[in-house]
Image 1 (tube, rainbow, N blue to C red):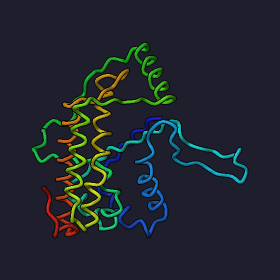
Image 2 (image 1 turned 120 degrees about the vertical axis):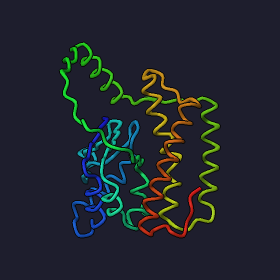
Image 3 (image 1 turned 90 degrees about the vertical axis):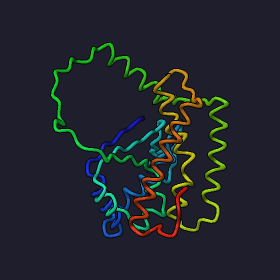
Length: 231
């Protein structure tokens, strides 16, 4: 099952996570979110309830895929970052996008939107439940595989000699994040037979490098990585 959770004021949520030891509920939520990141895919177990009689076990799987979209202000984002959150890999699971331009005068636009035809809704439901049951395989072209291999080498170079765990986490998970992002784009272009090509993967790498740089800057601003450099 695919689940998208939209969080407003994500920086405030980070603040709550940063003092999770004082709140067992937030600590459990943070641990769950950290674990779910690596649980997406066909026949992947994400949790449930186990009993002494295994036949009564309640297992949650169903090709689970979970995504979070959050928005916040830069100040709240920085205030929510602490050493533990940067070093345990929680922050490195997110892709950071910043907007530094001016805001529009008219933010809200009210339009009369026509209802979605029932035929389109039926088609969407059919595709959704079909993929939820069987998952979706995504192939890669030879060009994309070469780019991925080169990025793995670059990741190893960036980790070489780096002792700061906060920075190591940024690069350690980068290849997997690039694959996930490129796979989403490939599915958007061709849901029936998605293929990650060179252009698609190169775009994912550019977004990922941008995100790593932005998150590095935020971590550096907190003084957690002042002795390290980003290349």
